[in-house]
Each structure stands twice: as structure tokens, then as C-alpha cells.
Image 1 (cartoon, rainbow, N blue to C red):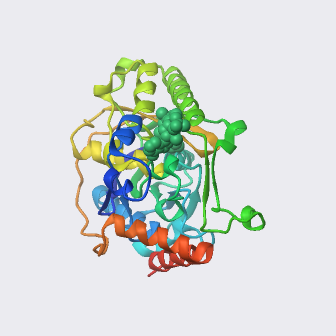
Image 2: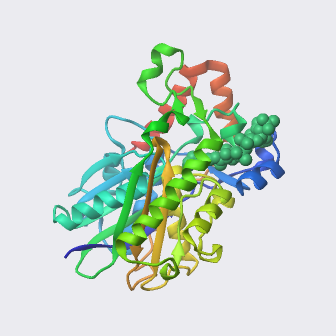
Length: 376
Ligand code: UT7
């Protein structure tokens, strides 16, 4: 039996930090509400495209695995905030890292895109169709945010991370997963303006309106992640006390606490980033995984549970056996260009463009990101 070992990992966090106090300068909100309802204190705002963040994360993951770009057979780019639809974004990363032998695909299941990507790439390695893959979770949400809507504007942030998978005879990497989707409730988490179907309904591309039923999403998120976790543990014959670390999707601290309670796993075994990064959608789980490794929370042979939830409403839980190595083989000197502005200045720039010029200005802004991202 062939397995897909995780042999490289890297993240790329944009440096500009948006605090709760920053949000309160233009929204009717405050630190006390945001912290008590979500656990979030800060999130990041990117000054570069998603492809650029994904590229730096991938270069760091490659160095960590001790591989060269042309060793890669497949790039899976998990995201719902793509810089472009055609050409796909994975090919943008491919050309920037120089992975000349790779196939490249984008995968969008919203916040669960990285985990669904992990399933996809692992399955392709198991069948022998590829031997080495990069799986990316990346999100550039801030240009698509409706900054007038306090229900959602406080929750999300930008970021990226990637892992390298390599075929292995040892029983490690993804051992099993439970995937699912509450499609009957797909309308309760919808961003109008990120697709073409709104053009005739008064919402232009780049000018977004968020349909977001927070309380219903909350309930479904807890139920979905708890049930998926229970099922994957049962399928793999694992009991909750055998889990060494939970690396969950981080949409809300209270959701994570409820899932851990349902799964009978103490919070000391749950890795948290929500307070520093908010919800980065597809980037959330891989960034948390990388930081758990950096902080020594993943040990050789650790058993990891990764529950996820997102738009669709997609849900999943993944069980991963870590291999022997928890330190990078090498490091990369890849860096983002310096950020000349504060996070609040970046957000105010987006807000001004949306207010002044409506959709066309916002779309123009997205174009600026795209051009940066496709710089070869
Ligand atoms: O990745 C998957 C996608 N997202 C999620 O999983 C998010 C799931 N949902 C949640 O995390 C929570 O439901 C929220 C954080 C979105 C909201 O928390 P809540 O405890 O469910 O609050 P609520 O919706 O019951 O709202 C309570 C009040 C409302 O005021 P009224 O109607 O009681 O007067 C809101 O208008 O809080 C108000 N409110 C705010 N107040 C200050 C909503 N957003 C804010 C805000 N600042 N940012």
C-alpha cells in the first residue's frame, strides 16, 4: 500500500496586522464584542496577490522537504478567493516556483479547500498517478470583504500555507477522512459578487454583498465537524484519547471549543491561531499545522485530527499520522516584498475604492493584485 507522507511545510503570512481597535475606527464594533463572541484579536491584510503568498509558502515547503521545484508532479491550489479563474491560480504558482514537470489544479470547497486538496493529492499518490505533490491553502479575502457589514468584516483575514506530499511505503500522512456537504443550506454562506451570476442583479464583480446567517452556520459547523470527526475516528479504529493534537478550522473559538467537547478531546490538545489570524478560510488549517510544527506541538508519530467546515456548506475531518521528521531539512530565503502601508491603510484603500468608484474601481484594484501575482 502506498501512503502520502507530509515531508515539507511552509507558511506565508502577510505582515500587516489589523487589530480589533482598527476595525472599530470605521465599524460599530469593539474589542470586547469581538473577543467574547469569536476569540479574535487580530488578523492579517495582504498587500500582494494570493498567488504571491502561495508561491512563498510553496518555496518554503519545498526547502523544508529538501526537494527542487522540478521534483513536483502536481500542485493543488485550495482557495475560494482566486486571483483569476482563467488561467488557473495553481499554474501561477507553478511558473513562479519553476515546477516545470508539474500538473496544476485549483480546488474550491471554500474553507475546507486545503483539506479536500489533501484528500485529492493523497488519493492520486495512492493510485500511482503522481508521486510528489504540493497542496496549498491560500486566501486573499480582504478585497472581497463588505467592509460596511460588521457581521462578517471582523471575522476574516488573509494568509497562505503549503505542504509537500511524497509517496511512501510507511503508514503515515492521511490515514482517513470523512467528507460531506450540507448543500441544502448553501445559501446561508454566500458572497454575492464573486461570480458571474450577479451581473444582471445589480452586484458587479468585485463589489460584494455577504449573505451570512452566523447563528445557523455556527450550529451546522459544530454539528458537521463533530459528526465528521466521530465518523473518521470510528472508520480508522481510533479513540479520542489516542489523538495527540487537533488542528481545526478556526472560524470562531466557541465553535472549536464545542467541537472539542463533542469529540471528548480536552482543549489542551487543540492548537489555536484564531486569536491572531481570525478565519483565513482555506489557509487556516495549513497555517495552524505549520505553526504547531514550529512550536514543537507535533512530535514524531503524532496522530492529528483536522476538522473543517466552510461555504457549501462543506464539512470534513481528516486523520493524519505524522512521520519521523518534525524539523525542516533546509530553509528558503523566499520573502514577500516589504509592505509600505499599515493594515488599516490597506483596508481604507479598499473601502475608498469601493465607495468612490463602486464595482469598477474595486475590480481595478483586484486587477492590480492579479498583475502582481502573475509577474514571472
Ligand atoms: O468558516 C466558516 C464560516 N463562518 C463561521 O463559521 C461563523 C459562524 N458564526 C459565528 O461565528 C457567530 O455566529 C458570529 C461570530 C458570526 C456571531 O456571534 P453570535 O454570538 O452568533 O452573535 P449574533 O449573531 O447572535 O449577534 C448578536 C448581536 C446582534 O445584535 P442584536 O440584534 O442582538 O442587537 C448583532 O447585530 O451582536 C451584533 N453584532 C455585533 N456587535 C458588535 C454582530 N456583529 C457585531 C460586531 N460588533 N462585529
